[in-house]
Image (spheres, rainbow, N blue to C red):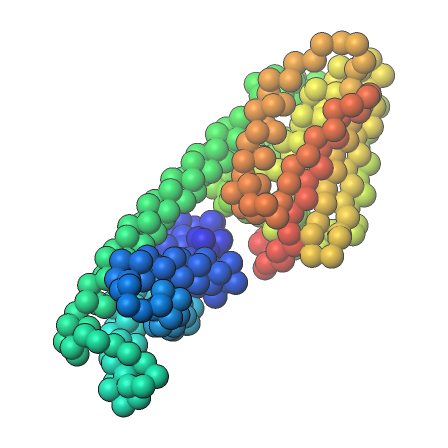
Amino acid sequence: MIAANDPDNESTQAYLPDFCAASTLFIIVLVAELIAIMLTLASHDAEHQFLIELSETSFFVLWIALLGTALMCQLTSYLEAAGQMRAFVMSFVVLELTCLVVAESAWQLTRIFGQSLIIEDAHTKFLLRTMAINSIVMALAMRYLYISSEWRRSIVLEAQARISALQALIRPHFLFNSMNTIASLTRTDPRRAEEAIEDLSDLLRANLGNATNRSSLKQELETAAIYQRIEKLRLGDRLNVRWDVAALPMRARIPSLTIQPLLENAIYHGIELLPDGGEVTVTGTRDGDHLEITISNPVPIGEKRNTGGNKMAMSNIRQRFELAYGSKGSVNIDDAGDRFTVSLRFPLDEGEDEE
């Protein structure tokens, strides 16, 4: 029920449900009807038919629920900008006023058309009783929304911590091997050594810089390509990477530091263990409003592989995809046979390209 705002900035976190969503409207109508049934059962008089009482109560409660939902749909953006506490207080006031207006309208209609609508309570008693019930229901709802908001905030902060940990997770052996390769190139090929230093600097900047939760596909692919060039200096002809990503929109957004760690796993847990090396394939396709990226690499057969780091990176990426896309995104693994394949599927979200 929480609106899926962009988590790049914690201040943009949604505190209130997306009242414009059909799923939210369905839940509100369902809860309103349950409240109507509860109120009818509590006040049912044996002299009256239960279904007639229920229809009258449901009609009244649903008017409050639907009108309040329509108002909140229009005001949610404004309320969110006011901050968490003010959003809750202002929402409470808006819904209380809505209830008061509907209750007063119902009483006046009953006074004018008494044959079709029956309210037996006096004016003041009816308004006070209706407002009291509405206040209790709204207080419980606001408490639920507050807990949901804090829960989502904790998830966002945890995701930020995971990104920071992933940024710091540069394997020492990679740095040592890269520096040794650069040191040897300074004597045999100074130009390539200089290029390798620049690539390593760019890679460290991408991994250790202040990255946001999401970046463009262009940035992600460029970071992965830099990593490939550095490893190519060390592995030589043993490493080949085939990129087939022309079908992907480069401005599409994706959780940052996704592709480079997968390419690193493909090399570290696959190519590096094969005496003759092999080819890593990175393919990207578009399926309507969804994108799919697949990273596949050969693996040694009959040899026990060290998959600890692989599992940690995969768990990190899967959890961040679940946070970013929910059920609309997926991270699937195919570890059968002589290849290890990771498939990422996520909705297309094209934003402004960041340089």
